[in-house]
Image 1 (cartoon, helix red, strand yellow):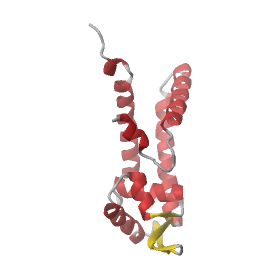
Image 2 (cartoon, helix red, strand yellow; image 1 turned 180 degrees about the vertical axis):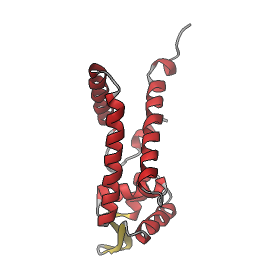
Image 3 (tube, one colour; image 1 turned 45 degrees about the vertical axis):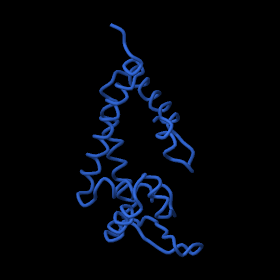
Image 4 (tube, one colour; image 1 turned 90 degrees about the vertical axis):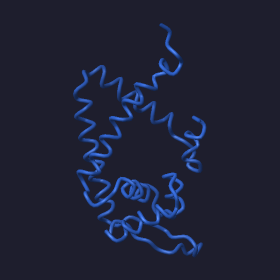
Amino acid sequence: MTQTWAESDGADAALAALRAMVLIADSTVERNTEQLTLTQFRALRVVVDRTPVTMGRVARELAMNPSSVTRACDRLAALNLLEKAPNPLNRRETLLAPTGPGRQLVDRVDRDRRRVLAAVLRRLDPPARAAAVAAFERFARAVETDESAPHSLLRRAN
């Protein structure tokens, strides 16, 4: 029996790893904040990583409709996790910045994720763990895209 390209390119193994990572990502958000949706947390993450950032940039980074991002950010502001202000250079834009509690929440989720990932990696024998870490580093570098086109990799894959 011959394998097709799709079966032998490693995509199935990568898909299984992606599913495991998404499970970890989702469960750590749920465990650390029962008041946010995953979309709201993803928006907060972009704001923390890109501060100050416009609402439009958050929408582009998340590949979401601007009105959905506005609703998510309104909720985050109501929860005192981010601040909104008019852009002094362009009054039509809103600038977003995290509050102290917003940064603390993202830090708490990151710590939890590191703890879970470390526990999973400890299940591997040392050579397999070193190989996995090296593969994660190479994979992350391969995924990195131009800041101006964060979803260009997805467009090229289609």
